[in-house]
Length: 207
Image 1: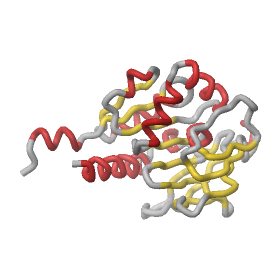
Image 2 (image 1 turned 90 degrees about the vertical axis):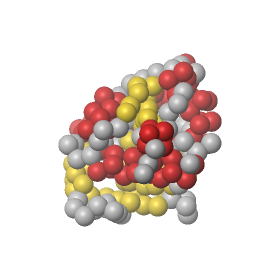
Image 3 (image 1 turned 120 degrees about the vertical axis):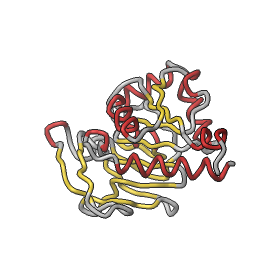
Image 4 (image 1 turned 90 degrees about the horizontal axis):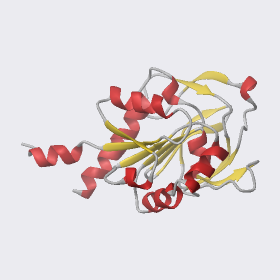
């Protein structure tokens, strides 16, 4: 029988980067799964977290706010040390190893072995929705693409979980998940469930 202390450790606390963008929708999705969350705005908010979600938004603005808040280097160090992270839309751009069409002062964490192009699917008026066949899901997931980045290349250790017209739009590399679209803008929490399962696997391996 699982002890109370062991059960407490198996319940992850997932941070949601809350500097800008659609962070509240991620908090809501995780709450629906019964997962404890914390909005992250300062380095102190990272203390005790088991994982981090980086939401969609405006990637250049988020890059500047990450730097001015002191979060950039702290997050990079924690992800480098193995903290699971899920980046959606702008969050994918921030994780990418190479960003095309970014501003000269734009920073990325360089943790995901992928090349992405900002707004690769066009501007706001080019936003679209489509059903995606996702590895591990029995039925399609409805993808909402808003000024979405296009993944132009991935490295050999990146697993492609979903594509649109041949282009990767959902990927996983070790403890990192990233999506070109906004899974938090639907009522479907299955991708958040996949991420929570990844986090719990990491917890189990550490115990």
